[in-house]
Image 1 (cartoon, protein in one colour):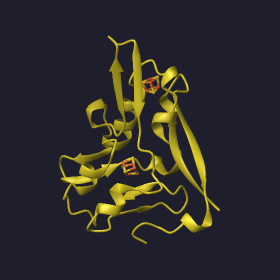
Image 2 (cartoon, helix red, strand yellow):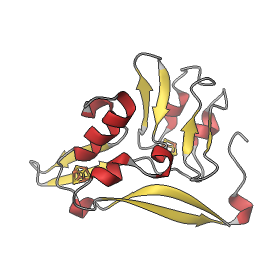
Image 3 (cartoon, helix red, strand yellow):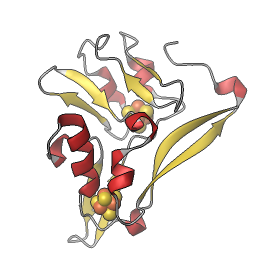
Image 4 (cartoon, rainbow, N blue to C red):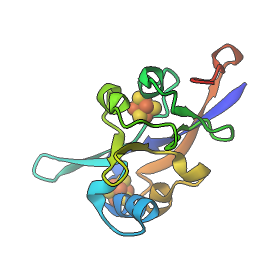
Length: 150
Ligand code: SF4
Ligand code: SF4
């Protein structure tokens, strides 16, 4: 048995403060730019509700499945799906096929970038003051442990 870690969202606790996005961009860029963060906050009903969306670290990951360069593989510790920038050819297939649009593009390198769980200690989870983001895991049966692109 293995554990796949992912970020669970509790939208009923989200206040829409965007601290998670600022923490994510700070880690990625070394500066605050919520538009470059790898999670999205959708504001609804005249700002009454706020829905965080984060990469699901899917077991049947379309982003990895469609990558022609086999550039997306699992971190051996967290099983997060991680982009190898040396292998990424910038074709955008992963971005196109992620059902929840959680793959971004590095505007400088023109290569894909996605949530890698910050190596197991996600900055967004640490920054969220309300518990709307939570590091969780699901147990993966042995028969499903085969690595994508392994
Ligand atoms: S980027 Fe999209 S398809 Fe890939 S693991 Fe995350 S949610 Fe799933
Ligand atoms: S930090 Fe937490 S409460 Fe603030 S927007 Fe992000 S998920 Fe919502």
